[in-house]
Length: 91
Image (cartoon, helix red, strand yellow):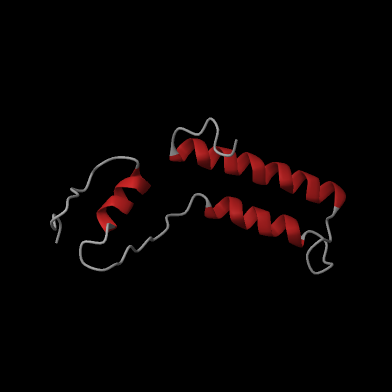
């Protein structure tokens, strides 16, 4: 299923890169004017997406007091780096 064989963020990034590169090959061969009728526009968008995969992103987690923000961050990181509990544990 989706995500099969993905064990890390790096694996996921590699799968996304391969998928975008495959899509770019198909677009270049079959539909180079897909976006706005201009030659290569679709390919340029995919090139931009591939470059963006190597740039850092900012993620902001906000929420009410004791609403699970640390749990969400731990889940995103795939490790229990922040303490969690029934009573507030971070400040």
